[in-house]
Image 1 (cartoon, rainbow, N blue to C red):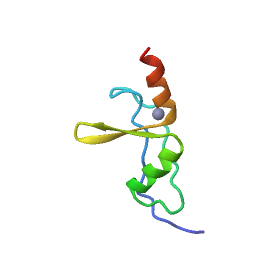
Image 2: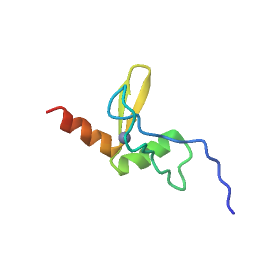
Image 3: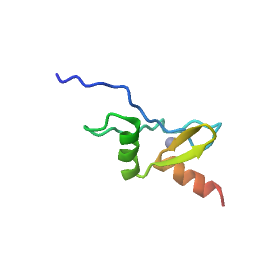
Image 4: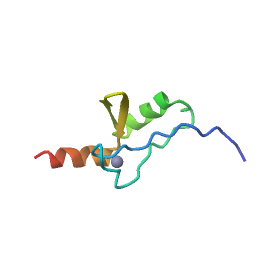
Length: 73
Ligand SMILES: [Zn+2]
């Protein structure tokens, strides 16, 4: 078995501040991705977006990004 450090998990912050992600999605980290920055880069390739919020970053999975746009109509 190969052990590698776990410790970077970038999970979806949901479509809204008060709403959890319906899919409980998280970015699948690539083999070489060890830091949050690297994992976010992996996520962008899959359609994830990062939004700036006061004091922190919010990571939004592709599903929630779409839901948000549809709901804005
Ligand atoms: Zn989500």
